Image (cartoon, rainbow, N blue to C red; front, side, top):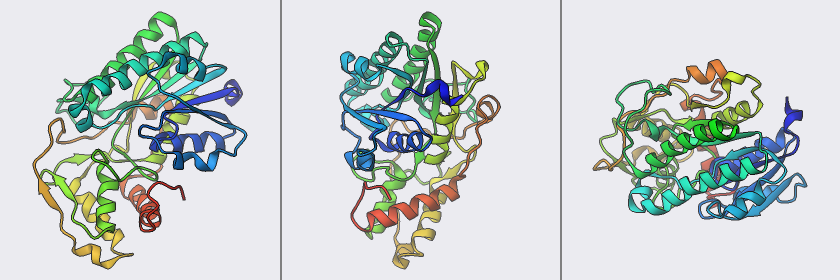
Length: 335
């Protein structure tokens, strides 16, 4: 099947956490990769090791510019759309920018893909789409009302993808990521994800601040599972698998308190003093959901997806990377 995709594949947001890992995997699988990024949240360090590879092309630009999107899609068969402005709190603080990047940018990319004859458009969705639905596990066809501007943008993206297939015939696949973590996830900044932020605090001998009492639970998903799902979405020859949305997760949930326990256990093997660091609890944040657990049956059935790393295995791998990099003050370099 890969011969079908032997022209350039495009990764938007390719210098980001997920995007750079995806670029690595595509190159390792023999593809020629074009990376589009404006470096607003992506990091040059994440792709520095790729710049001398003749099969890797960096195009610096913003998906809010339709001309840049059109140029990026030239001679491309497959688009992996990872570019987005993430974070629920960021979207609450600045809904206009989140809307412009996540919705306007997404429509620009769909139009550019359509106009350039792109055959498949694979995009990053989010578990935030499930909103206020209390049902567990989360099943793709049963969503609630969104709880944040970010969640609204991710829901709208799915509607646009469906309409573009119906009206223009472009094949799309949406992947609803559940709390992705792993190597290169940035621990810095106000909107850093919980795992890298806590790791950095522990390695610095500081107490991390947890929103809520720690009983909220998440289906934490290691980066390798996400990359695997993207490759499956590209390679599938099953017509029934196209123009669908899939959960990408482990199908297990872990409380934040359990996450901290495991994190301290493994990190204290390297720095014993971490075992005695206390966590500070604060109020829950607006827009946060209490519990998240994915059904991955649809992805198993139609894509052949199986998570390679359950939470604890993925956490151990991530902590090894962070210990190596953060303890040396190299927050964003690849190992």
